[in-house]
Image (cartoon, rainbow, N blue to C red; front, top):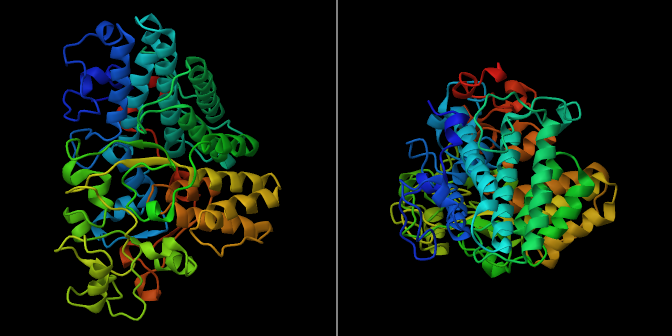
Length: 510
């Protein structure tokens, strides 16, 4: 049984034993390397940071379907939400969120295991880096990166295993087990307020250390100051700390202008000037048929996309204005024939021919569906690509939402105009909405802009909005087993319970 106690000892240098890329993890400690050797020098410690980077796209728990951050995006962010339809009745338990109270389920356990693995490795670095041989600037930068990883992991855990802030009695509800060193003693849960205080402190400390170090990163997959600001912005908006969210969002996007329309249509698989943080992916660092791209990319050759491509819902598609480039990234079936009960188009149909004409890199044996997505593509087969985690677009949306709640209507409108009009994504966009209509506009453009990137369910939870899926029989996008309506007070208030594998070990949680 793997618990936090064991996870904290899984040092990155021990976990990651092989790598092929010249640029990524080309050198690493062997499985017999002792902790003292891993942290003997700052050069070795930097390899441990690379190891945490790689854990974010590594097969875990001996199950091919669990692969770092991509699994979190798909299983916990995209599938349980409102905006993606997929003809997978056998996945109803995941898509409908029925595992949240099943404390023995591996699906309930996976995020706990994954993020505490990142935390355990970050703690080892934070604890040992000061004694490493090397320049102080390198120690400061490496510690800042480890603090950034820890803050991100605790924040992500809080979204899954803790109540939404608005239901937390100002943070008095249960939080997480907050380990900040390599000890393995049994520990009770913190409060949610204490969890956020830890996230904030780690980010404050990281930002200060990044500045003191005077160093900058070499690769988009490495955490840096902008990544810390971006995590801060996302955490603050989730905590309803609107002034902090707005300020941090502005800081996070500094130096990361919105991408061009050409870049927007290039597949979301390679870092560009808008990408603040991502995970590395290449043919020699592939998860084969089990990566995010193997499940999502329209041109992949895995059965997950050949048989059941991911589709935007008809309801959301119809809300995207004509002339907005984001609408062109989904297959519009207007005027074409397809099976309305599933969305599938016959292989010889005019709709299938249209799709292949528009995107000739669709795999030859892939099935075509109405509203299938062309936003995400793979750079290589079966499903290779760099996985984005933060973009400047999200920061504009966080700023807009924060300013709305700060009663800065003009500021919220300006943030939406910057994202949608000034970027060229919709040159005729304007925003005059006020009151609750402005909030709905912000929510709409989060759904449009961030579609397929792992936000849908997390947004619904923090807002306290319903999952509302209309069946194909009633003119919607969902097959019967997935056409549910669920309120945020259901299923343990959309809060995943602590896994049995943890409570069995840690009696302080019982």
